[in-house]
Amino acid sequence: MSDIQSTAERTQSRNSAGVAKATDRVASGKAPDTVLAPVITIDGPSGSGKGTIACAVAEELGFIYLDSGALYRVVGLASLQLTIAEDDTESLVNLAQTAPIEFKRSLSGDSEVLLDGQPVTQTLRRERVGDRASRIATIAPLREALLERQLRMRRQPGLVADGRDMGTVVFPDATLKIYLTASAEVRAKRRHKQLIEKGMEANIAGLLADINERDDRDHNRAIAPLVAADDAISIDSSDLTIKEVVTKVLDFAGNRL
Ligand code: DC
Image (cartoon, rainbow, N blue to C red; front, side, top):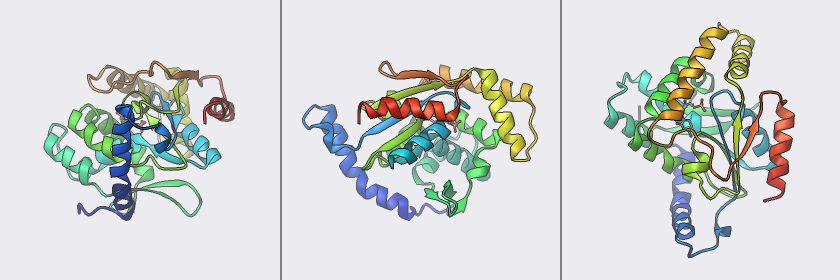
């Protein structure tokens, strides 16, 4: 794989210096945070619906959308393709720093992830890739490398970011923080439906076991574990429709933006 940065990444790099400095200034209390674009963070476990909700909220507000899990998944996918071992930290961190990742809109309006110019959006959803992503996400310097990429996405008019540590680590000064949950059983059923609709094989018991295992790892890892920020608003989506959750988030956002 080449380590040539894509156009999108180069553009983001130009913005990154300003964003990083502004972050530092705000952290040190020397500048008003009006310098920074507003951020809405949506954190939660796999299958809580955070991607769907974050995407819809971003669309509604005309904000940029950051699927941080896709970053971990792309690095996971690239590491599988390049047969980099799970414990080869140096190569994994190098990959996280240099992999040519782009987020784009497809002609049909869907958001698409490209790795080295190739669309990988569907491949990223595979269980094997998700599992690898969750494992490599425990490596501190790899998270550090992806942190830089995430901060560069913060641009006007605003950002909606979904993941595990968006409100706790990446954007602690976010305007609105949502912690989205749903029971493991509901999440397994949703995932099953998605896979069947895509014509892929799936079995609820297996999916539930995978979800529980991944939750356990994401919640209990030493670095940036999945946990609600102290100032996050929790929403349980188990018995809510997508529209109902989006409306709730927009209502909370409306009071703060
Ligand atoms: O949200 P997702 O299922 O696409 O994320 C895949 C894995 O990436 C998840 O199991 C843990 C990791 N991840 C993370 O550690 N921090 C994030 N902000 C997003 C994802």
